[in-house]
Each structure stands twice: as C-alpha cells, then as structure tokens.
Length: 449
Picture 1 (spheres, rainbow, N blue to C red):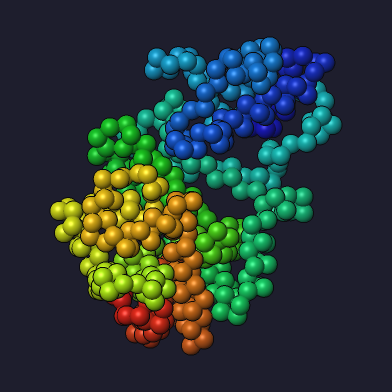
Picture 2 (picture 1 turned 120 degrees about the vertical axis):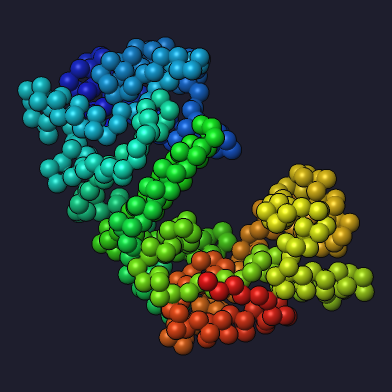
C-alpha cells in the first residue's frame, strides 16, 4: 500500500511542486483506516467499525486542500470509495493485496525513469513471494463493503540485514529474556521454540468451523463474530508454522501481571489438539482457578478477623477448593452455571459502581469478602484481577514449573493449567497439589483432560 502511494505520487502527482504533502497525507489516511484512533478503543471491533472522517475534522487535520487530496487518492486507486453505503456517508477502503500489486506493476511499466532512482520500495522486491491461499470457504460474499474477505494471502519476505531489525525484534527480545532467565525458564523457552502444528488439519478444522458458523448465523453480527474468530485462528496457525525459522513464536513474561505469555496461551482451545504430539499429552488445570487463588490473598485477613468473618472465610475456602464455587453462586442467584460464571466476572472484575443490584445480592451472603474485593478495586478496578494473576504466575511459573523442570518434566503452560506428557501426569498432579496446598491451606480440585 505504501509502495502504491509512493509510485503514484511520482507518476501522477496532484501537485508536482508539493509531492511530499501528497505522500504525507496519503500515509496518514492509510494509517487512519488501518489503525483507527485510540479514542474509539472502547467500541473497537476491528475491522468492521469505521473511524469518522467528517469534513470538519479532515479540514482541521489536512487543511482546505483535503478534498482534492482524497479525490487524487481515489482516482489513482490508492483508496476505494464506496458512495453512501447503507444510507451513511462515503466510506473509504484500502485496496486488496493483489489489486495493489497489479496497480504497482502497471504503474512501474509506465515510468520512463529507473524506479530505484525515484523511490525505495518496501514490498515489490524480486525475493518477495505473494501467494493466494484459498481455504475452501463457499457460499460467502467477499464484498469489501461488508469488511469481510474470505481469501488469505501469504506474503513471504526473506529476512536480510536491511529488514532484520524490523521483522525479528520481538523474537530477539524474547531470546534475551530466555537466556537471562532462571534455569527452569531457559529450558521451558528452548522447549517451546521447537513446538510445531499440523498445518493442514488445523486449517481444515478452522475452515469447516467457520463455514458452519456462517451457515447457522442468525444475523450479520454473528457472521462478523465468526469471521473475527476465523481470522484469529488462521493468524495463530501461521505463527506456529516454522515458528523458529520465521521467528514468529513468542515466549515472555507480561510486565503487568507477570504471566508467561506465549502463542499457546493466546491460542483458541479448539486448536490445541493440532499441536504436534498433543495426543500423547495431558492437560491439568486448577478448577475454579481465580476464585481458588483468591484464598491466597484472603489468608492475610484471618489474623484480625472476627469469628463471624472467619466462618465466612472458611465457607468460601471450602466452596472454592471443592470445585463447587459456581454451584454456590447458582444457588444464591437461582441461575444456571453459565450465568453463574458471568456473575463472578461482574463481581470480581467490573468497576465498583457497575452491576450494583447483582453485587448487593452477593454482599448479603459474603459481606466480608465482598468488602475486600471492593477495597481492592477502589482506585483501579482492574487491580484485583491483576493481583490474582500475579499470584497465579508466582504459584504456577515460579513454583510448580520450577519443581517440574527439576524432575525432568518440561511443561507447556496455559496460565492456570499445564500440558505435560501423559506418562508424567501423576507426578505433575502431585507437584501441583503440593505447591497449591502450601499457599492456599487446603487441597483444591485439579481437572485432568
């Protein structure tokens, strides 16, 4: 897209005396369309919501000549303009990859000068390979007006000394982290970087899942949601393919909550079975993870608690560690399990001023615990969840994983769960329970799949 803009400004400038302005404004508008504005993040639903480009804002940002610049971009196919789509104002879109490539090539052929003497191109290089990947999506309308494209293009850009620092920064940063980490994390990082995925099977699963979702969608919003999930899964799959060579695998500690973030922790659960070797692995996770780990925090409140408060803390401890916490909420509210999980999310992670009626019901049953949660969120409502995640990270990464690696069991982490070889299942469970009892004070439930 950048190359198309640069070539166009040199071949067919709007104003030969001020080509720099054309490029600057063009890049800014392209950036607006791609990234939108941070002020709209709350309602962001990429790539389907639009950023307002009302004339009064464009005039403030680009001056009185904004209209000719926009027209110039449209006339030369840098942008595509959709007139009054669905009763609203004009919509502007970026061209698809094959259209960009085709336009660039045709424009280059019309240039009498050597392109290298005019601009430095970034994408149209002889070593760059752009291939269409058709994933077999049928009966779908790939109309750009709807913001949905069903075909994927793989762009292979070889890493060289010129682009290396742009393409491999995150991977090299992770390498530095792994090399300077504790011994068990070094081994876990090295092990993770050899992970692979069954590409064809994962793609087929994702394609079939998406086709079924689109077929059964009850409205356009469901189609958009299905497409977002489809896009996310495709991107995740590609990160695992030759991940070490392509430097697309991530392995680092989150600076906010200290969790170990990897491509696997961000992967949709239905794609995990396609990890090579998964059939010989078992997943062990802590049942009612966040509610259970809250008990670690609550232990410090026992010292000065009254008899009534101790009774409440004991009830919470028993309910969460027995694996029946959501059943307890179901009983309190008279709701099903799915709604019970939603209620817990509202209680624990929303602002204190939100969902007051739901919180008042919980407050009657667990007044002391509710007050603790409320106090934790007083200044910043996400503080409670971040503290729970830090506890989770300390227990699972710094204690359980350390003990496992010490015994030759190298796990793949899923935040509150671990993937290990089936032969190591019993020992892994023993180590998990041993560490959890130390910090919680009671043996919790471990789910094994």
